[in-house]
Length: 298
Image (cartoon, rainbow, N blue to C red; front, top):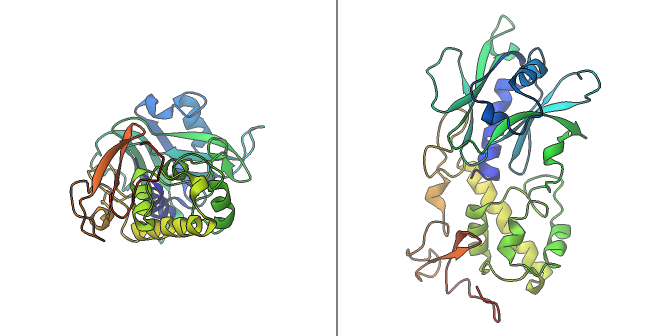
């Protein structure tokens, strides 16, 4: 599933194409990609056509584009996108070759793309597995209702690492489960949790309450460093499902130290990395650098 770096790469790629653009047309090719929208495809189209898009925003793994104006008593709204496991937001010229698994098409008039003051551009939502989707949702303080419960992420300027570290240390659950709790800190998934824990030399099952404040802060700093590096390298791509808005893959997979390296030597100490079942997925660690906490069964 796309995590914070992948979604941020998409957000940044969308910004120049959609900011200030007017929606001229909407085509829903698969209604299943509107499961988060209240109303059918006719309502989705009627709500969007004629409106102008603002600057794309993101919180954790949620991405949205503010919409200008208000319809009736509905209040402020945004076009919300959740990529699920395989969702893609692709920017294309109108008439460009079809993209596989395209579910929704938005035809935009972008004033910044042409000297005459206008230029057409098409945004396509493609999704092979259909766990993602688009929706028009009401916003409160600029945040769509479906993302209101999501905590700030470590690269947000308003992120309070000290407060999050204190909350982490109040938990009996394992530290990896805490990192994946989007109400504590957002945007982290299995890949970047494994990477940050490897950097911090922490076993995934270490209870939060056993971690000192200093070590919790160091872990959050490692999370931030991993996310920043992944952003610089365009995110992590293992197959063709995660791509940026131009259809290009990220290459952070070449910089991974832990995730996906079961059976390979630890880049730090040379011990053989182990991949273990964890919470219906898996966790990869170095048995020497990330020792199991005493008294904790995994």
